[in-house]
Image (cartoon, rainbow, N blue to C red; front, top):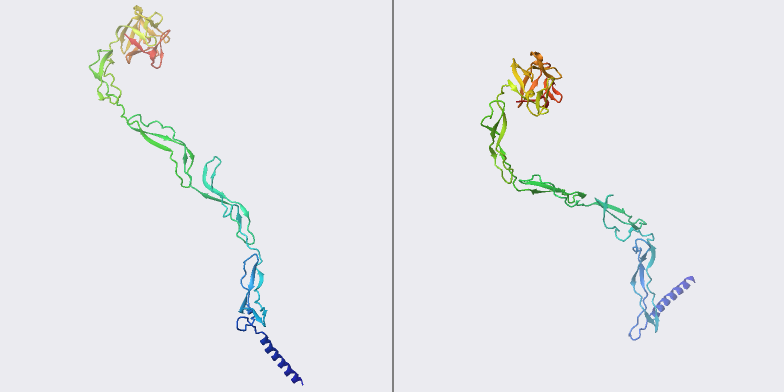
Length: 382
């Protein structure tokens, strides 16, 4: 019985399927045929595709691969809608924050223009600096901000003052050089144009004056006197003639004093003092040189006595060196009455017999107490 029921059920199903297939036939008006409605056929892919964004939230899809597209149709004069293809499946992906890089004020790398650095006195030091400011710091692993200040070297040319005045020429004539200079306002740095502080030029090219050059004086003839002090002529030759406005030659002939052999001292002689230049007189208690004219008191009798001399004054008595004065009151010559009279240039010196010292013309009289010869210790013997 059961088997019969089963067979009947199977038969019923088969009849239903055949009938249903016939119901799906469509009548296409004006198409001279029958069209069937077609449902979408296909299958989803196995895996999701790539995320639409790498960060910040994107979409992944699994596309539906269509093997049969859906088509509209009519069944027994009625339009039948097919089963449409499903939309792709979607899901959210990469929801983590995107990295945000550092941003600088003004955009880009944000650098300002290069600015030259100066020292406290306003001079360039050979470096320049540029800066930038941060608009936004990096986030979520973005590129971080770099340094905000950057310095580099740069060439600095020397800066100088104006030239000062030219200095003196090294030569006054015949060609020389002169210099002028200037000071440094800004030293060169890092290979910049160097300073030039000194400038040289030529000067005074005109030939130098040549002065006359004369040779040494040579005697022409002999002395005008055979003894004592006389005169003689001297000449000199030109060694170099003057040129270019040089100094002309001076006199080439001159008269000079000459000393011949010493004249005899013996006899009546007159003295002039070295201090006063006046005649010396025997005043009895002294010999003083204060006379402007010659009388009997100003004459002395000089005679040789061995290697020395004796002097006699106005009374005819011998003159003696008493240390503090010379007095002519001796009747006989002794050691004090003997004097040395020695030539000294064109004059004479008188050496006393008492101490052997030089006699000097002092205002109070002749005194023989000097160790050296000066103007007061020389006398003119006439």
